[in-house]
Length: 219
Ligand code: HEC
Ligand code: HEC
Image (cartoon, rainbow, N blue to C red; front, side, top):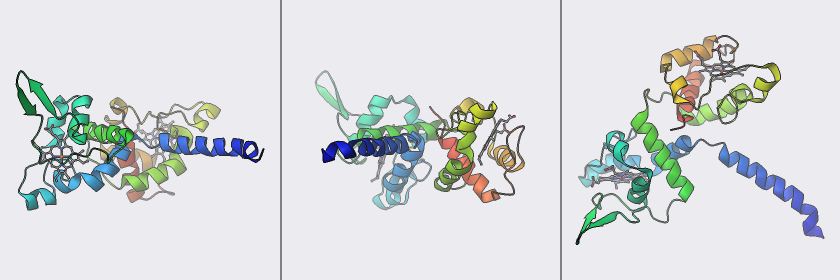
């Protein structure tokens, strides 16, 4: 009796939580995890020059080049350590040396997917990240999602109401055409029906937004 009264509210809450989780772009989530767990060895840009690597005297791979030829399945094996060995005839081979820690049981499947999305981003990106994407996400939700959509795909509430066609920020073919400076400029000065934000947002804000927009790219 009591339970059934609360059930609808509980379901709504769960839906809200699910919606919140799905709005975090995979590469953005992957960058968070990478910053906490991987950059110590692999370096902030994945080039292999992290501070711990120097201390341990090891040379981690330059992920911006090696990851290109690896399938998602192999990357998953490398990261979790599960099935890192493969067998040809009688000999076992390691895909990589065991200097790379095995992260089995530490990440959920979704987190491993997010890490892989960020590794793909690192190996494909045409423009470096500028500004703080964490701040960028907050600003994007507050000011931009209404037209560009929560997920950045250009389907915001306002788009339907007044028939606008904002840029699809999840499509790297569209966003890569603009370098960082051009994007900052469009945000601050406006472009067509896209409002100029310079009275409301600082240059630093615009840089943070550019960084977040880059991480919205779908592979
Ligand atoms: C303690 C240092 C260390 C940490 C922390 C670390 N790695 Fe590594 N990683 C290495 C080393 C060393 C190699 C190179 C092993 C080799 O080439 O045989 C490597 C290799 C890799 C490779 C394989 C590159 C290739 O294609 O050959 C991937 C992918 C990778 N690491 C991802 C990650 C991710 C994701 C994290 C964070 C969850 C992480 N690493 C954290 C040391 C580290
Ligand atoms: C009122 C709706 C609206 C809002 C709000 C909005 N945009 Fe846009 N945005 C557009 C439209 C429409 C375009 C396409 C403009 C064109 O090419 O004519 C666009 C294009 C862009 C472009 C590409 C510009 C170029 O040079 O091609 C960027 C980058 C962008 N928006 C970022 C943002 C950011 C960041 C925010 C939040 C601070 C934001 N937008 C908020 C409607 C909006």
